[in-house]
Length: 107
Length: 120
Image (cartoon, each protein chain N blue to C red):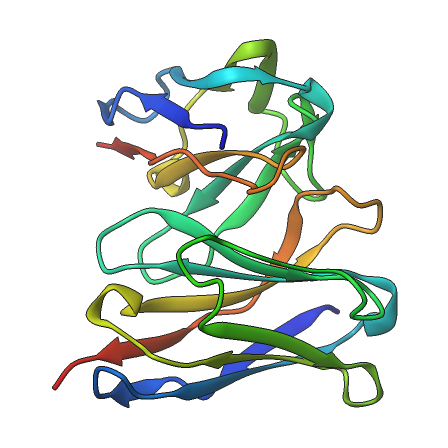
């Protein structure tokens, strides 16, 4: 099983600042099969990024993904108030399709 | 517009059973693999099961294999999760999700979830 470790656990920032979230895999992951999700309190997760760097439909361009191998990054260039949420990484190329434990972006 | 609506959650005693349903609309249900993901209170996301378009290929997390059974009815645009021998560790919000068209793909649409509470 591929274990995904996200850091930091919590990121305290202000609107307008840049957020950098990391996800490290216990073994190499194909960048074709790496995703990021956003989850707000009381809501279902929403797909943000797939194939490591492609934005899902309707996702603003302030969200970007990068990385390969075992290290992946989600960057939010300028935080908007609605971006404060929990973010999860996922690898979906190997079974079981595991998630990271989440990074909370808070004000 | 794609919609996924889960139902069937509730309070069940340890050792009991529950059947969750997920009703899909807004897309050709039979063209997509479907997923169950759960989230324990205050915890992260855990993939539970996957079922292929025709139901021929089914996969389970180790934590539920042998206790949970996933199925689908393409004529009714629905998938189901039969959960047996439930324990407190199964307490979670259970989400139904759609896997993108090209397996393997990420989960591009999610339902709002249904809460399962296992407690005496």
